[in-house]
Structures are given as structure tokens and as C-alpha cells.
View 1: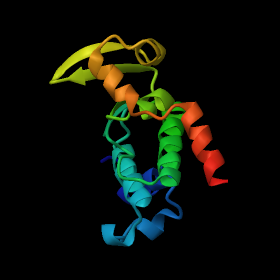
View 2: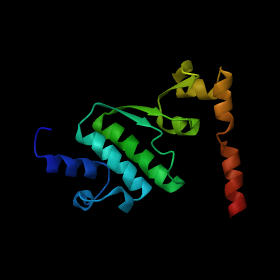
View 3: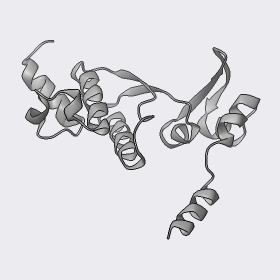
Length: 149
């Protein structure tokens, strides 16, 4: 890496919303929450100053509130740094929230692709329809919230 490595790492940690960055220099994974671990991984990628990142199931193991924060971070970085991104997920609800385009793979082949609206609002392949069948609808989420209150 060109430049001051400590400075580059500190900036990457700050960009990943881990502040103060010095707090994380000597941290070991067991000392960090799941969200902090994910942000450290993102910071590691950012330290290389990429134009494009690949994220495989970036929020799969996180609870809802932490998940929302990491997704917001990815969207912010995409806008602020002009990063391109490929996000791999089984969660089409996640794709709906963060993607411009989506491709659905089934048995190692792309069976459907296009804009998020085209693919997710009018799925043509049976596998896409199956994936969408497990995404809670807005009405279902509103009913669940009402029952909790």
C-alpha cells in the first residue's frame, strides 16, 4: 500500500463508521459485535481503495437493527465513493432495497435478470417466484406490527 498504512487503515475504519478508529487497531474478533465485524471487513476492502466491491450475504447473520445500519453504510459508500457493487444474496427483499439491477441464479445459471422492478414485480421464472414467496409483503409486516402493539 502506498502512503502511511496506519493513516489508510484509520480512514477506512472511519469510512466504515468505526470511530474512533484507534479503538479497533488491536481488537480481536471476539471483542466485536457482529455488526462491528462486518464493518471491519468493509473497512478492509475500503483500505484498498477499490472501484468495485463484491459482498456475499453481507447482512445474513445480523439482527434487524444492525442489518439496517450495515445496509445504510453500503448505500452511503456507494453514493459518496462512487463504488460499484455486486451483492450476492438469497434475500430478494434485500435486493429490492439496495439494488438497481438483479439477476436470479438457479442451479448455477442465470435464469432471469433485469431491473429490480422488472424482475421482482413480474417474475418470469418459477425459482424467482419461490424466492419471492418468502419475502413478507408490506401488508403482512403492518399486521405483525399491529399485533405487537
